[in-house]
Length: 465
Image 1 (cartoon, rainbow, N blue to C red):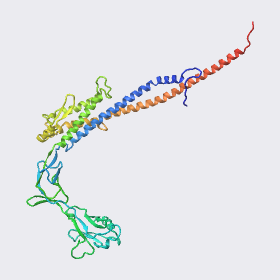
Image 2 (cartoon, rainbow, N blue to C red; image 1 turned 90 degrees about the vertical axis):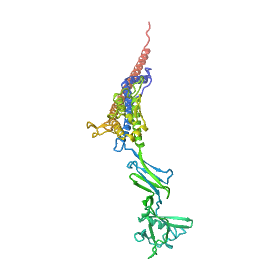
Image 3 (spheres, rainbow, N blue to C red; image 1 turned 120 degrees about the horizontal axis):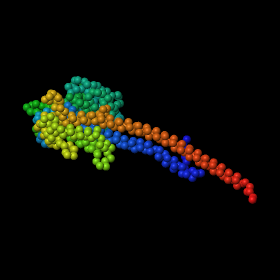
């Protein structure tokens, strides 16, 4: 039962304020717990913020320690400038290779349009004129029947389109409207290039020529590249996929000048991965410094936490320490400033990949056990960073994750203790309220008795001398 009490009517005391002050004094332990809870929540959040930056280091390091992490990409260049062809290259392309060709014809998908036309599309009968139904879809040889399509008597041109498109005979139909009263039936091959050519045979065509009811508006043909001395490459589309390993060429217009596609190493992709790793390391190191600052007046959540500061130091050591003899980080453009920031010279890194790829591989990727003098593998900079970040941020065993989880356990303990104090203080307030209410009741009773006695005394006869 909740009770309330303000100023005592008999005592004149501000009992409500007095009770609040008593409860506030008795709540001092709970107030201290709340302060600890806030600090612990801040600590847990700080650990997780630092952990996020180490997870980023881990992801960036994994990209460089994968099987193809340090494999330079490939780029294809087309000459002359303004050529009517484009080219792309994947990592499997062979650097130093090239191909010269002259664009020939471009690819076309076989398309035919009916010679007959209809005045409406949804009324009238498509059977009123050629082609006569059922029609046959035949291959370009004119003899191989792919399928037969028929429509019901009275079917409209739109009905015929629907009937054709329900089949899987290698063609798709649509209506081409030359004007409001001139509509024709168009069929397009679903297969590009020469192999997609087809013939539409009318039911009235027997014996001699077939397909006379349609005109080819596009004749199915393959794109061609003339490689020289009568050698021709063909493609059903305008893209010649893997015309060389990992290289695809696309032509945009027929004919044109002699064109050369060349493949070269592209260090930019690897350099971009390295830049991402450097950025991640700098972000992690800076976050560690911010959250563990011991500077005068610092209120950092992890002030002086050695378990965190040591992780930051490990990151910088991993980047600044040589990998074996002659494997100084500076050889691949990595250096450390006095204020603990990692710098990356992209141009120097690209040069190292090109001129001394084995050294670059060793510094970043490490030395394998078979290459090591003593048979012990030596991790490179990326491998070192991966190990450090994994130990810190692994979702199950990471040190930062464990530290954050430990704070979570403390938070739960504090929350439970604070809740228990809420109950204790509520009961204490209720008890004090009852006590002061009882006091006021007693004082009221005493006052009434006093008044009665005074009345009785006053009513006694006065004595005469």
